[in-house]
Length: 173
Image (cartoon, rainbow, N blue to C red; front, side, top):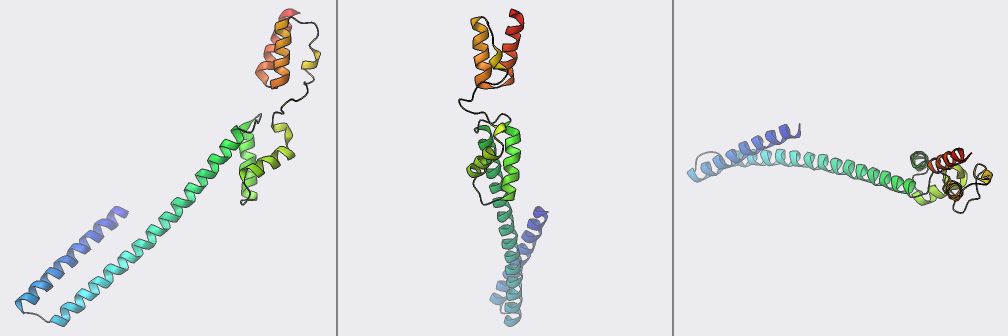
């Protein structure tokens, strides 16, 4: 649609340029009413100014929309970074909860919202130096590989380590 506007504006500008050339030619030849030509040129210039002013308003609106979109993308990137670097067990869940919290209090920083989320829902995050889980406390007599797997499962708290430990324990039994 803007291409159509641009084409229409170019066509109108060309017509105005032709009128100005005719006006200049008429002035040189001495024929025609000078006041009439000046009035016509003034009207053309006013129309052009109105067109340009409306175009400026459109461009300013487009700029505002682009800035808002950029700010939104930057906010999304900050949420993604915070969720992935937070030590979350499920970063996607943390990201969704952070986005919801940000909509509720848009002025707060992502770090403050993340700290609040850690306080409210600590189960979403891995704890550094956390005590062993109930599953890893039942290691019993196992081969050194089983003990290492049990310690890894307890320290990391992720599913893959736990499954590896259980597989080793089942093979030894």
